[in-house]
Amino acid sequence: MSHSWNTDFLTSFSPDRILIILNQPFSFQLLRSVWNASKWHYCADGGANRLYDLLSASQNAESLLEVYRPNLVKGDLDSLRDDVKTFYSSNAVPIIRDEDQYSTDLMKCIAAVKEMEQTEGREFEIIILGGLAGRLDQTIHTLSYLHKLRKERRRVYAVTDDNVGWVLDEGEHAITIDHSMLGLTCGLLPVGIDETILTTRGLRWNLTNNPSSFDGLVSTSNHLVPEEDTVYVKTTKPIWWTAELRPLKPCSEPVKLNGKML
Image (cartoon, one colour):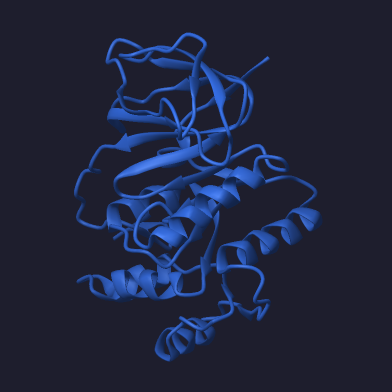
C-alpha cells in the first residue's frame, strides 16, 4: 500500500495540526502560512524569542502579538529571555520548565503534544518550524529525531524558508507536488541507514532499484518535473525527502482580530 503525502500544511487549515516553533530565524510570510494552517502553536524555549522579536519589529506589533500568541512555551528555559517570559506569562500563555538534560527543547514539546493526544484521544500532525538550518548539530538532531519518530507517528514535517522535509519510511510513497509552493530541486537523503534501494517516478532523473548510501549514491539536486503532479518513491529503508520551497509572496501583514482583517 502506498503512503500519500502533500504540503497542505503550508496552505490549508487542519484542526488536527500542531506547530512547534524552534529557536531559528524565519520570515513573517512563512510564519503566517504554517500558523494559519495549524490549530495549536507551541514554542520550544528560545522559539518564543524568535516569535516575539519578529512580531515586535512590525508596524502592527500590538495587534500581531495578540493574534500570534502561542498556546504553550516549553523547554529548559535557558534561552528564553526575561522580557519575553514576562510578556507571555502576563498574557496567560503557559510557560513550562522541563530540566531534563537528556531531552532537547523539541523533544520536550513533542512530549507535551503526546500528553494532549492522550487527553484528546487522537493523533496530531506536527509541523516543525526550523530545525533544518543554522547549527549543524541541531540540524543533525532534527534529522535523527524525525527518523526515530517515524516509528510512532504518521505525519511530522520540518520547514524553513528554504525547504521542507520529512522521513519516508520503508515502503511505497506518493507525494503530491504543489508546484506553486515547491521550487525545482529536491533530494532523497539516506540519513541514519547503511543503504537503501530506491525506485522513483516523476523526477527529472529517476532511479530504478538503485542502491543509495553515504558511501555511494546520494540523490541530491534532483529536479521536480513541471508536468508531473506526483512523485512516487519506493525505498527499502527509511529515507529523508527534501524539496526546495519557493519564496512566499510578501504581504502587508493582514491578520484577523475579533473577526476583522487588520
